Image 1 (cartoon, one colour):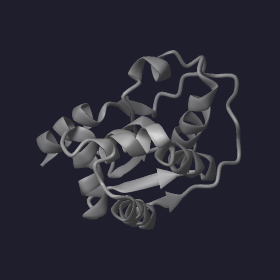
Image 2: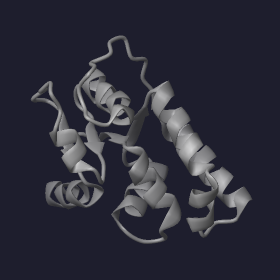
Image 3: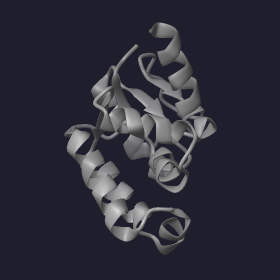
Length: 145
């Protein structure tokens, strides 16, 4: 099981807005150094954009300072990956393409998302790309131990 992961933005938002659940468990594991999150510049900028939206902030139980500290702690655990190729058009939702491109570039990272259907509709197929929900991935992690 790969310890390198890519978090779709919906997973990170879920981890920030819910104190429980598999997204929060993944975030805890990242902060504990169990798993290495991989990001591209475009994915990290999307994280910052979505997490700073008023509707996301309203759903987050953390005060502003703690939310910013949590994001800083998460960022300190991320490995930035430079993308050299764009695989487009590939997904119906253009905003998912940069996440898919990161998965192609990293070769061994598992892409964690709550939108499995969106990634299953890819026009291009890469057999090494594994796309799972956080709950599915955590269940596999438990089996491997």
